[in-house]
Length: 451
Image (tube, rainbow, N blue to C red; front, side):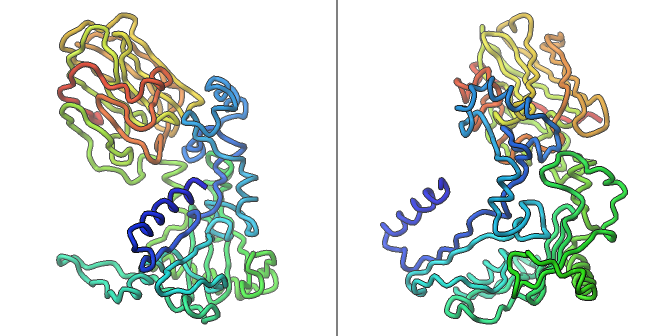
């Protein structure tokens, strides 16, 4: 509803400018199925992506601390519905997001409007298409031939198929013949009206590594088979009746996977479950920031709180100082170094259900200060405890251990800030004071991964 309203505002403005008739709108509702990462219901969705186990009591306790049921849907929670509602929300298809074997994890409604060229037509188009077909559709409408090279750099091939042929002919024969799907070993392949798939080794609603995952062999997975011309909701599995067709589709899946650099099967499981440090990230190991720095996306920022780090901040601290020295992430998960009434605080917010907070016993004296934060993982495994030591001008002012850490990321959309905490505030201590700008001056901040 929120998205529909905001898109409506955009269209209203285009119409007010007199340009709506010749504007092409391709509206896709959703992305890839209802999210089952709510598991049994959660107040912080990214617990699931980070494979951190929790109990219902953890969520109820935290919710009560945040204000009870009224906190749901507010800026204080990143809640997600129970996985059962996800399955229901994907109906009439089976399964949920993160499942490539069923349309409940891949299929979404799409509507196209172009008042100047398309007459109102409510007839659903039955042709099979994929999101990669949108760009070729626009290229054909605009009579654009994509360049083979740009500034001398060869461009990747465009694998999509234009959907323009369906605009005037609802019953036209489909032109996309093949499409494969794979997400962490959950696989599917469409070809000429048939679909074969296998659920894969992992349930989206179960955190952590599935039992027996180290012995999982994709070649032993059981596949399903559906005739989409007669069974578009995948209700009647024909695999037992047509084993030769299943093998044909499985072979085609491997061909498409090899062609599109999708091997080894289930390769993404390695990053998510076993070695988060190998996830794609910035190649840098050292950063230098001068003065205040704002809104560096988490995926491009140093992995504070997830790997060993040394942070050094040169600052001029006023008497009884207040404000954020640095913060990564947001209220749903992150970490922050900040000051309140002259005391220095460090907070590690593990997706709201665990907050580790340290506070200096004494106030930090006014004047120039070199503040150092050394963080070291205690074990070489995901979710390891983290030892944190904070010194000011070489003297330890606080230390402690974070019992569990986020192996992948705190948020999908928040940032690293220095001297302020924009976006969602990390800590409950300054939630009502955000962005809680530091009152003093920050000189040079360095962040490094120790050798």
